[in-house]
Length: 130
Image (cartoon, rainbow, N blue to C red; front, top):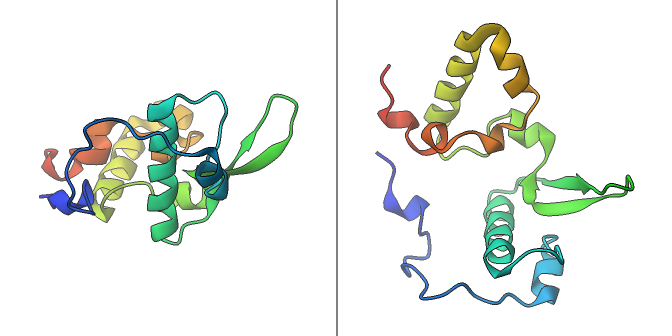
């Protein structure tokens, strides 16, 4: 069973509203995107802090004009391939096994970052049937 502290490491419980994160804080954590609403900006910051707390390298974003920049809310491709975006190693093992059983259909999923897997795989892995 997943420990509740995985979802609320501070133990503060839910916030009454989405915070308005200052742009300089988002910029410092490489997660400022001017098109984000408050919720998305706060979520990117939390993702960036989670990644940094685990000493995982940040990923990058490539703009339509080809310019690449760090995106702290994203894992590096190597960290994604290693399963770093999953809550537990058991969930990562389950996802790899499910992809292996998909056979040729899995090739479409292998090209995507494993950090974008479905909530079932990410959160329900330990409860999935063997």
